[in-house]
Length: 272
Image (cartoon, rainbow, N blue to C red; front, side, top):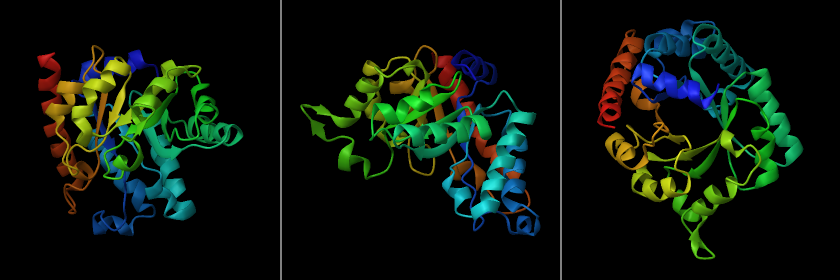
């Protein structure tokens, strides 16, 4: 999917909502456990109820890998269902991969060619030759971890190295990578006040922003400091939407929570 197409969907839906499909069988409604594939049954119901309110879905692959081959098959069913029924949706494999070049190429093929995701999250620690294999795929996007929403982000990401915070060096150096126009970046909503300086470095790149909702991030703050001329934001909510109810009305409850965020996003878009 091209960035221009994604921006068009954001304008059309008045939404830059990304819904995280972090599906945990300990949290899904109990009646779904009787299904042949309860993970996919849960995901399908959430997708069908919310697809008109969001522009992206982001399965975190750990929640599927934890269940072995059945979990991976549920992930495959989920992405196939999205691509077949809602091809306008931007899909993100939240896999946080990152390895030497040959291995990165295989990871890229797995997520972009075999599964058919539009994008994948990547850890940048190993540098250029671990990232560029992902960037080589046409109309696919590589989402680098830049400044994350967890407390441990301060262990390394904000440390000064040669007079500049490490996360800023990640942003600046990554701009020199081949096909860097295919880069997006993860910036946590709980770090919203950092966004002004981040936008000084990458004024037009899309940011994937987790942490709104359950983690306490503010949508208004993210928009105030992070929105660009082309919107440039995909704001993710996972638990706050998909686990809005553990009853049989769970899908409708998730749609109601998604609608609340979509309406807030509509207001923010109209402000700008």
